[in-house]
Amino acid sequence: MAVWVEIDLCNGCKRCVKVCPYGAMEIRDGKAHVLEHCTSCGACLEVCKEKAIQTDVEPRAIPDFNDRKGVWVFAEQRGATLNKVSLELLGKARELAGEIDQDVSALLLGYQVSGLCDTIMAYGADKVYLAEHKNLKEYRTNAYTNVVEELVNKYKPNILLMGATHIGRDLAPRVSRRVGVGLTADCTELTIDPEEGILLQTRPAFGGNVMATIANRYSRPQMATVRPGVMEALPKSRGKGSVIKHKVSLTEKDIGTKILEAVREKSKGVSLSDAKVIVAGGRGVGSQEGMKSLFSLAKVMGGEVAGTRIIVEEGWLPADRQVGQTGQTVRPEIYIACGISGAIQHRAGMLGSRYIIAINKDGRAPIFQVADWGIVGDLHEAVPAFTKALKDSMGK
Image (tube, rainbow, N blue to C red; front, side):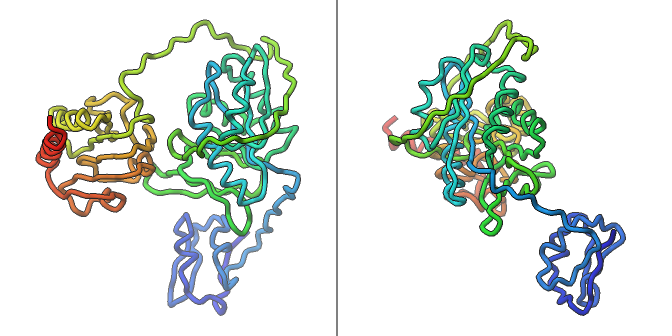
Protein backbone atom coordinates (compact mmCIF):
# COMPACT_ATOMS: atom_id res chain seq x y z
CA MET A 1 0.00 0.00 0.00
CA ALA A 2 1.82 3.11 -1.23
CA VAL A 3 1.52 6.55 -2.76
CA TRP A 4 4.00 7.88 -5.31
CA VAL A 5 4.42 10.71 -7.81
CA GLU A 6 4.80 10.32 -11.56
CA ILE A 7 7.47 13.02 -11.89
CA ASP A 8 6.89 13.63 -15.61
CA LEU A 9 3.25 14.52 -14.96
CA CYS A 10 3.83 16.77 -11.94
CA ASN A 11 3.78 20.53 -12.59
CA GLY A 12 4.80 21.54 -9.06
CA CYS A 13 1.50 23.30 -8.28
CA LYS A 14 1.84 22.61 -4.50
CA ARG A 15 -1.83 21.71 -4.05
CA CYS A 16 -0.86 18.34 -2.59
CA VAL A 17 1.49 20.01 -0.10
CA LYS A 18 -1.23 22.37 1.10
CA VAL A 19 -3.88 19.69 1.52
CA CYS A 20 -1.79 16.96 3.19
CA PRO A 21 -2.86 16.81 6.88
CA TYR A 22 0.35 15.01 7.87
CA GLY A 23 2.94 17.18 6.14
CA ALA A 24 4.02 14.19 4.10
CA MET A 25 4.38 15.99 0.77
CA GLU A 26 7.14 18.40 -0.24
CA ILE A 27 8.35 20.15 -3.36
CA ARG A 28 11.96 19.49 -4.45
CA ASP A 29 13.38 20.77 -7.71
CA GLY A 30 9.91 21.92 -8.74
CA LYS A 31 8.32 18.49 -8.30
CA ALA A 32 6.22 16.88 -5.56
CA HIS A 33 7.77 14.12 -3.44
CA VAL A 34 6.13 11.78 -0.93
CA LEU A 35 7.82 11.54 2.48
CA GLU A 36 8.19 8.42 4.61
CA HIS A 37 5.47 9.30 7.10
CA CYS A 38 2.72 9.30 4.42
CA THR A 39 -0.38 7.47 5.71
CA SER A 40 -1.97 6.91 2.28
CA CYS A 41 -5.02 8.92 3.38
CA GLY A 42 -5.67 9.93 -0.24
CA ALA A 43 -6.15 13.67 0.32
CA CYS A 44 -3.46 14.51 -2.24
CA LEU A 45 -4.99 12.29 -4.91
CA GLU A 46 -8.25 14.23 -4.79
CA VAL A 47 -6.61 17.61 -5.52
CA CYS A 48 -4.05 16.53 -8.13
CA LYS A 49 -5.59 17.71 -11.41
CA GLU A 50 -2.67 16.35 -13.44
CA LYS A 51 -3.19 12.83 -12.02
CA ALA A 52 0.52 12.78 -11.21
CA ILE A 53 -0.04 11.22 -7.78
CA GLN A 54 -0.69 7.49 -7.95
CA THR A 55 -1.58 4.79 -5.43
CA ASP A 56 -2.05 1.05 -5.33
CA VAL A 57 -4.84 1.44 -2.78
CA GLU A 58 -8.20 0.44 -4.24
CA PRO A 59 -10.60 3.41 -4.02
CA ARG A 60 -13.54 2.87 -1.72
CA ALA A 61 -16.77 2.59 -3.66
CA ILE A 62 -19.45 5.14 -2.82
CA PRO A 63 -22.76 3.35 -2.17
CA ASP A 64 -25.95 4.18 -4.06
CA PHE A 65 -28.04 6.50 -1.88
CA ASN A 66 -30.88 7.16 -4.32
CA ASP A 67 -33.35 5.79 -1.74
CA ARG A 68 -32.22 8.41 0.81
CA LYS A 69 -34.42 11.47 0.53
CA GLY A 70 -35.20 14.47 2.69
CA VAL A 71 -33.59 16.89 5.10
CA TRP A 72 -34.79 16.16 8.64
CA VAL A 73 -34.75 18.36 11.73
CA PHE A 74 -35.29 17.07 15.25
CA ALA A 75 -37.92 19.47 16.62
CA GLU A 76 -36.86 19.67 20.25
CA GLN A 77 -39.54 20.64 22.75
CA ARG A 78 -39.89 20.80 26.49
CA GLY A 79 -43.27 21.18 28.12
CA ALA A 80 -44.86 21.53 24.66
CA THR A 81 -42.68 24.58 23.94
CA LEU A 82 -40.37 24.40 20.92
CA ASN A 83 -36.71 25.20 21.37
CA LYS A 84 -35.72 28.17 19.19
CA VAL A 85 -32.81 26.23 17.71
CA SER A 86 -35.31 23.89 16.03
CA LEU A 87 -36.86 26.80 14.16
CA GLU A 88 -33.40 28.04 13.22
CA LEU A 89 -32.50 24.61 11.85
CA LEU A 90 -35.71 24.47 9.83
CA GLY A 91 -34.60 27.65 8.09
CA LYS A 92 -31.23 26.13 7.21
CA ALA A 93 -32.88 22.83 6.22
CA ARG A 94 -35.13 24.73 3.81
CA GLU A 95 -32.04 26.22 2.15
CA LEU A 96 -30.19 22.89 1.94
CA ALA A 97 -33.24 21.03 0.64
CA GLY A 98 -33.71 23.62 -2.10
CA GLU A 99 -30.21 22.94 -3.39
CA ILE A 100 -30.77 19.18 -3.70
CA ASP A 101 -34.49 19.34 -4.60
CA GLN A 102 -35.71 17.40 -1.57
CA ASP A 103 -38.34 17.92 1.14
CA VAL A 104 -37.90 19.21 4.68
CA SER A 105 -39.29 17.08 7.50
CA ALA A 106 -39.36 17.49 11.27
CA LEU A 107 -39.35 14.84 13.98
CA LEU A 108 -41.65 15.76 16.86
CA LEU A 109 -41.59 13.50 19.92
CA GLY A 110 -43.54 14.03 23.13
CA TYR A 111 -46.98 13.69 24.66
CA GLN A 112 -49.94 15.86 23.66
CA VAL A 113 -47.70 18.00 21.46
CA SER A 114 -49.61 17.74 18.16
CA GLY A 115 -50.53 21.41 18.50
CA LEU A 116 -46.94 22.28 17.61
CA CYS A 117 -47.21 20.80 14.11
CA ASP A 118 -48.73 23.93 12.57
CA THR A 119 -45.92 26.07 13.98
CA ILE A 120 -43.28 23.68 12.68
CA MET A 121 -44.77 23.75 9.19
CA ALA A 122 -45.06 27.55 9.34
CA TYR A 123 -41.29 27.71 9.81
CA GLY A 124 -40.39 25.53 6.85
CA ALA A 125 -41.31 21.86 7.27
CA ASP A 126 -43.16 20.01 4.50
CA LYS A 127 -43.87 17.05 6.77
CA VAL A 128 -43.95 16.38 10.49
CA TYR A 129 -43.32 12.87 11.78
CA LEU A 130 -45.30 12.89 15.02
CA ALA A 131 -44.54 10.35 17.74
CA GLU A 132 -46.73 10.75 20.82
CA HIS A 133 -46.67 8.55 23.90
CA LYS A 134 -46.97 9.14 27.62
CA ASN A 135 -43.45 7.78 28.04
CA LEU A 136 -42.15 10.54 25.75
CA LYS A 137 -43.58 13.39 27.84
CA GLU A 138 -40.18 14.05 29.42
CA TYR A 139 -36.90 13.53 27.60
CA ARG A 140 -35.27 10.24 28.53
CA THR A 141 -32.32 9.01 26.54
CA ASN A 142 -33.33 5.45 25.67
CA ALA A 143 -36.94 6.32 24.90
CA TYR A 144 -36.11 9.10 22.44
CA THR A 145 -33.20 7.17 20.91
CA ASN A 146 -35.40 4.13 20.26
CA VAL A 147 -38.09 6.17 18.51
CA VAL A 148 -35.73 8.27 16.39
CA GLU A 149 -33.85 5.12 15.36
CA GLU A 150 -37.14 3.53 14.26
CA LEU A 151 -38.08 6.59 12.20
CA VAL A 152 -34.67 6.84 10.53
CA ASN A 153 -34.61 3.16 9.61
CA LYS A 154 -38.19 3.25 8.31
CA TYR A 155 -38.18 6.49 6.27
CA LYS A 156 -34.46 6.73 5.34
CA PRO A 157 -33.59 10.45 5.40
CA ASN A 158 -30.62 11.92 3.58
CA ILE A 159 -29.70 14.49 6.25
CA LEU A 160 -30.58 14.69 9.96
CA LEU A 161 -29.94 17.87 11.95
CA MET A 162 -30.24 18.46 15.70
CA GLY A 163 -29.58 21.37 17.99
CA ALA A 164 -26.40 21.21 20.08
CA THR A 165 -28.44 21.60 23.27
CA HIS A 166 -28.33 19.47 26.41
CA ILE A 167 -30.83 17.13 24.78
CA GLY A 168 -29.26 17.21 21.31
CA ARG A 169 -25.78 16.52 22.62
CA ASP A 170 -27.11 13.45 24.41
CA LEU A 171 -29.42 12.18 21.67
CA ALA A 172 -27.47 12.79 18.45
CA PRO A 173 -24.40 10.63 19.22
CA ARG A 174 -26.58 7.78 20.43
CA VAL A 175 -28.72 7.85 17.31
CA SER A 176 -25.66 8.06 15.07
CA ARG A 177 -24.15 5.02 16.79
CA ARG A 178 -27.41 3.06 16.52
CA VAL A 179 -27.81 3.67 12.78
CA GLY A 180 -24.08 3.31 12.08
CA VAL A 181 -23.12 6.75 10.76
CA GLY A 182 -20.77 9.55 11.73
CA LEU A 183 -21.75 12.77 13.46
CA THR A 184 -20.27 16.26 13.14
CA ALA A 185 -20.94 18.20 16.34
CA ASP A 186 -21.20 21.96 16.97
CA CYS A 187 -21.21 23.02 13.33
CA THR A 188 -20.92 26.71 12.50
CA GLU A 189 -21.87 26.33 8.83
CA LEU A 190 -23.71 23.82 6.64
CA THR A 191 -23.63 23.89 2.84
CA ILE A 192 -24.18 21.54 -0.09
CA ASP A 193 -21.25 20.57 -2.29
CA PRO A 194 -22.30 21.74 -5.78
CA GLU A 195 -20.64 18.80 -7.55
CA GLU A 196 -21.44 15.83 -5.31
CA GLY A 197 -24.60 17.12 -3.65
CA ILE A 198 -23.38 16.04 -0.22
CA LEU A 199 -23.53 17.97 3.05
CA LEU A 200 -20.42 19.98 3.93
CA GLN A 201 -20.21 20.45 7.69
CA THR A 202 -17.87 23.13 9.04
CA ARG A 203 -16.80 23.27 12.67
CA PRO A 204 -13.84 24.52 14.75
CA ALA A 205 -11.04 21.95 15.20
CA PHE A 206 -7.68 21.61 16.94
CA GLY A 207 -8.78 23.68 19.92
CA GLY A 208 -10.55 26.18 17.69
CA ASN A 209 -7.39 27.20 15.87
CA VAL A 210 -8.69 26.08 12.47
CA MET A 211 -12.05 25.53 10.81
CA ALA A 212 -12.52 22.01 9.44
CA THR A 213 -15.04 21.08 6.74
CA ILE A 214 -16.22 17.49 7.02
CA ALA A 215 -18.13 15.41 4.47
CA ASN A 216 -19.67 11.96 4.75
CA ARG A 217 -19.58 10.16 1.40
CA TYR A 218 -20.09 6.61 2.58
CA SER A 219 -23.12 6.42 4.89
CA ARG A 220 -26.55 7.97 5.43
CA PRO A 221 -28.10 9.92 7.00
CA GLN A 222 -25.54 12.70 7.14
CA MET A 223 -25.79 13.90 10.74
CA ALA A 224 -24.79 17.19 12.34
CA THR A 225 -25.58 19.26 15.40
CA VAL A 226 -25.65 23.07 15.42
CA ARG A 227 -25.53 25.33 18.44
CA PRO A 228 -28.42 27.72 19.16
CA GLY A 229 -28.03 31.12 17.53
CA VAL A 230 -25.76 30.00 14.69
CA MET A 231 -28.49 29.76 12.04
CA GLU A 232 -31.40 32.10 11.40
CA ALA A 233 -35.07 31.10 11.39
CA LEU A 234 -37.23 31.96 8.41
CA PRO A 235 -40.08 34.44 8.87
CA LYS A 236 -43.22 32.65 10.02
CA SER A 237 -45.59 31.90 7.14
CA ARG A 238 -48.84 30.08 6.51
CA GLY A 239 -47.00 26.92 5.70
CA LYS A 240 -48.96 23.82 4.83
CA GLY A 241 -47.79 20.27 5.07
CA SER A 242 -48.68 16.79 6.20
CA VAL A 243 -48.50 15.11 9.59
CA ILE A 244 -47.40 11.48 9.64
CA LYS A 245 -48.24 9.76 12.90
CA HIS A 246 -45.79 7.12 14.08
CA LYS A 247 -47.13 4.43 16.38
CA VAL A 248 -44.97 4.17 19.48
CA SER A 249 -44.66 1.08 21.66
CA LEU A 250 -42.65 1.86 24.77
CA THR A 251 -42.64 0.38 28.24
CA GLU A 252 -40.78 1.56 31.31
CA LYS A 253 -38.65 -1.57 30.96
CA ASP A 254 -37.49 -0.36 27.53
CA ILE A 255 -36.40 2.97 28.98
CA GLY A 256 -34.49 1.95 32.10
CA THR A 257 -34.54 5.35 33.83
CA LYS A 258 -37.03 7.43 35.80
CA ILE A 259 -37.17 11.17 36.35
CA LEU A 260 -37.71 11.65 40.07
CA GLU A 261 -37.64 15.43 40.06
CA ALA A 262 -36.89 18.28 37.65
CA VAL A 263 -35.31 21.38 39.18
CA ARG A 264 -35.27 24.35 36.83
CA GLU A 265 -32.69 27.06 37.37
CA LYS A 266 -34.16 30.54 37.60
CA SER A 267 -32.71 32.78 34.92
CA LYS A 268 -30.98 35.97 36.01
CA GLY A 269 -31.67 38.78 33.58
CA VAL A 270 -32.13 38.38 29.85
CA SER A 271 -30.58 35.36 28.16
CA LEU A 272 -27.70 36.25 25.86
CA SER A 273 -29.49 34.46 23.04
CA ASP A 274 -32.37 36.95 23.36
CA ALA A 275 -30.30 40.11 23.95
CA LYS A 276 -30.50 42.85 21.31
CA VAL A 277 -27.31 44.52 22.54
CA ILE A 278 -24.28 42.78 24.05
CA VAL A 279 -21.24 44.49 25.53
CA ALA A 280 -18.47 41.88 25.78
CA GLY A 281 -15.14 42.03 27.53
CA GLY A 282 -11.89 40.21 26.88
CA ARG A 283 -8.41 39.99 28.32
CA GLY A 284 -7.88 43.71 27.69
CA VAL A 285 -10.41 44.58 30.41
CA GLY A 286 -7.62 43.76 32.87
CA SER A 287 -9.56 43.26 36.11
CA GLN A 288 -12.97 42.83 37.65
CA GLU A 289 -12.89 46.55 38.39
CA GLY A 290 -12.46 47.14 34.69
CA MET A 291 -15.75 45.35 34.01
CA LYS A 292 -17.73 48.14 35.68
CA SER A 293 -17.56 50.43 32.65
CA LEU A 294 -18.95 47.62 30.48
CA PHE A 295 -21.92 47.20 32.81
CA SER A 296 -22.53 50.95 32.72
CA LEU A 297 -22.54 50.98 28.91
CA ALA A 298 -24.81 47.94 28.74
CA LYS A 299 -27.26 49.56 31.17
CA VAL A 300 -27.50 52.73 29.07
CA MET A 301 -28.06 50.70 25.89
CA GLY A 302 -30.51 48.27 27.46
CA GLY A 303 -28.13 45.39 26.78
CA GLU A 304 -26.38 42.52 28.50
CA VAL A 305 -22.74 41.97 29.47
CA ALA A 306 -20.80 38.96 28.21
CA GLY A 307 -17.19 37.89 28.03
CA THR A 308 -14.57 35.64 26.54
CA ARG A 309 -13.32 32.46 28.15
CA ILE A 310 -10.61 34.24 30.13
CA ILE A 311 -13.21 36.53 31.74
CA VAL A 312 -15.21 33.54 32.94
CA GLU A 313 -12.12 31.65 34.11
CA GLU A 314 -11.06 34.66 36.17
CA GLY A 315 -14.47 34.62 37.83
CA TRP A 316 -15.48 38.08 36.60
CA LEU A 317 -18.62 36.72 34.93
CA PRO A 318 -20.63 33.49 35.38
CA ALA A 319 -20.26 30.68 32.83
CA ASP A 320 -23.60 31.41 31.16
CA ARG A 321 -22.21 34.78 30.06
CA GLN A 322 -19.39 33.30 27.96
CA VAL A 323 -19.51 33.79 24.20
CA GLY A 324 -17.46 31.61 21.88
CA GLN A 325 -16.74 28.07 20.83
CA THR A 326 -17.00 26.71 24.39
CA GLY A 327 -19.71 29.19 25.40
CA GLN A 328 -22.80 30.57 23.74
CA THR A 329 -23.47 31.59 20.17
CA VAL A 330 -25.27 34.93 19.92
CA ARG A 331 -26.92 37.06 17.21
CA PRO A 332 -27.62 40.50 18.75
CA GLU A 333 -28.35 43.63 16.77
CA ILE A 334 -25.22 45.24 18.23
CA TYR A 335 -22.15 43.45 19.63
CA ILE A 336 -19.51 45.67 21.26
CA ALA A 337 -16.21 43.82 21.73
CA CYS A 338 -14.07 45.53 24.36
CA GLY A 339 -10.46 44.42 24.74
CA ILE A 340 -11.12 41.26 22.72
CA SER A 341 -8.39 40.20 20.30
CA GLY A 342 -10.80 38.21 18.13
CA ALA A 343 -9.39 34.68 18.20
CA ILE A 344 -11.31 32.21 16.05
CA GLN A 345 -12.69 30.52 19.19
CA HIS A 346 -14.49 33.73 20.14
CA ARG A 347 -15.51 34.77 16.63
CA ALA A 348 -17.30 31.44 16.23
CA GLY A 349 -19.79 32.63 18.83
CA MET A 350 -20.55 36.15 17.64
CA LEU A 351 -20.14 36.38 13.86
CA GLY A 352 -23.91 36.29 13.40
CA SER A 353 -24.26 39.70 15.08
CA ARG A 354 -25.84 42.32 12.83
CA TYR A 355 -23.35 45.06 13.74
CA ILE A 356 -19.99 44.55 15.44
CA ILE A 357 -18.12 47.38 17.14
CA ALA A 358 -14.55 46.63 18.26
CA ILE A 359 -12.48 48.57 20.81
CA ASN A 360 -8.87 47.49 21.14
CA LYS A 361 -5.46 49.13 21.64
CA ASP A 362 -3.90 46.86 19.01
CA GLY A 363 -4.92 48.04 15.56
CA ARG A 364 -3.79 44.69 14.12
CA ALA A 365 -6.10 42.63 16.34
CA PRO A 366 -8.12 40.06 14.30
CA ILE A 367 -11.37 41.43 15.72
CA PHE A 368 -11.09 44.42 13.39
CA GLN A 369 -11.29 42.08 10.39
CA VAL A 370 -14.91 41.24 11.24
CA ALA A 371 -15.95 44.56 12.83
CA ASP A 372 -18.28 47.04 11.12
CA TRP A 373 -16.77 49.88 13.16
CA GLY A 374 -13.50 49.93 15.05
CA ILE A 375 -11.96 52.12 17.72
CA VAL A 376 -8.19 51.76 18.16
CA GLY A 377 -7.61 52.94 21.69
CA ASP A 378 -7.77 52.22 25.41
CA LEU A 379 -11.16 50.74 26.28
CA HIS A 380 -10.94 52.30 29.76
CA GLU A 381 -11.09 55.69 28.06
CA ALA A 382 -13.27 54.83 25.07
CA VAL A 383 -16.07 52.98 26.87
CA PRO A 384 -16.76 55.70 29.50
CA ALA A 385 -16.64 58.36 26.75
CA PHE A 386 -19.04 56.30 24.64
CA THR A 387 -21.37 55.88 27.64
CA LYS A 388 -21.32 59.61 28.42
CA ALA A 389 -22.05 60.51 24.79
CA LEU A 390 -25.06 58.19 24.77
CA LYS A 391 -26.37 59.60 28.06
CA ASP A 392 -25.98 63.15 26.76
CA SER A 393 -27.82 62.33 23.55
CA MET A 394 -30.68 60.80 25.55
CA GLY A 395 -30.78 63.69 28.01
CA LYS A 396 -29.82 61.57 30.99
